[in-house]
Image 1 (spheres, rainbow, N blue to C red):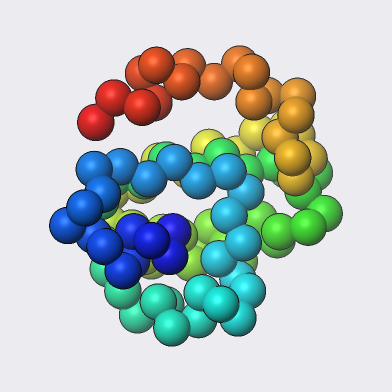
Image 2 (cartoon, helix red, strand yellow):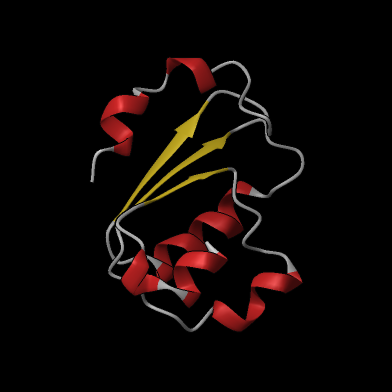
Length: 91
């Protein structure tokens, strides 16, 4: 997410897995609005990254976002292999 904020012209798409956009390191980018498409996966049982606050931040940063809430924990180990990576990685 930080790389996309700093290099929007070099990024075609962002795929974020339980992104820690609530941490202090991301604070300087909270005012950004990016046109880069973003796909986010976040588990409902994530006990590391707070779903609600991070979702608000991501939806404010990325104008074109698909936010996928899945029944999983922070590492997303139960759903990671089920993602259609070929399709996700296409721009």
